[in-house]
Every structure is written in structure tokens, then in C-alpha cells.
Image 1 (cartoon, one colour):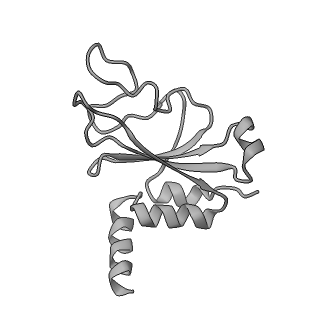
Image 2 (cartoon, rainbow, N blue to C red):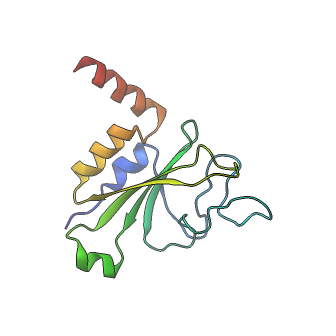
Amino acid sequence: MFEINKYMLTKMGWVTYSQSRGIRLGNSITFTKPTKGPFLESVVFEDDPLVRFFFDDKEKKVCYVIKEFSDKEKQKSKNLYKFVSLDYTEYGSDSWKPKIQVDEISSNEEIWKLIIENEACGENYQRNFRLNKLLK
């Protein structure tokens, strides 16, 4: 069992999830059901007590979430958290279907690998990660 390094996540631009605040993606997508068109209500994390942190990359239109496993999921897996990426680049089109990828994580090291791989952090860190990749 491990504890998520909250300090590093918040320093990298991640936000601690709050049910009262929710997650607002981009400038136009919210987690409320619109009167017309597709909506995220069935796939997003509104009022989800298991969400711990999120990062919304507005340029790439991808939202990353660190979510705790439910009690039922914990019985099936040795891991405690999952790293979820939700691609909303085509949101608003009639044929839009969310692209969701879920990775189970069991350590802070796995979180950092996924953050670096997806560049799921603020611009300063993204720049450093890109430079490090070029130098390898």
C-alpha cells in the first residue's frame, strides 16, 4: 500500500478533486447534461467520491484522473488506484464517443511514468520532459 505524493502532483499542475467543485473540461464542456447533443454524464466523474486528483490539458483536450478503486474492485486487484485519461477532442460532434484509457497503478513511480509518458502536467514540466527525451 502506498500514499500518493500530493505535493508533487499539485506542483505539476494537478488539482485535488472536490465534489462541490467537480471537473470542468476546457471552456465549453461541463458535467451537466445539456439540452441537446452528446453529454458526458455517464462517463465523467461528477459526484464521484473515489476521484482524488485531476489534470485537464486544454490544448490536447484530454483530462487525466487519478481515481481510487471501489471496495469491489479492490477485491479483484492488488492495486489501489487507477490512472484514467479521457480524450474529449471530438466533443460536440454527433458521432462523438469518449476515448477512455485506464491504467492500474500501484506506486508513485508508476504515476510519474504515466505523467511523463502522457505529458499530463503543467507547461514547465512538459518542456523539461520533452528536453529529457531528446537528450536520451
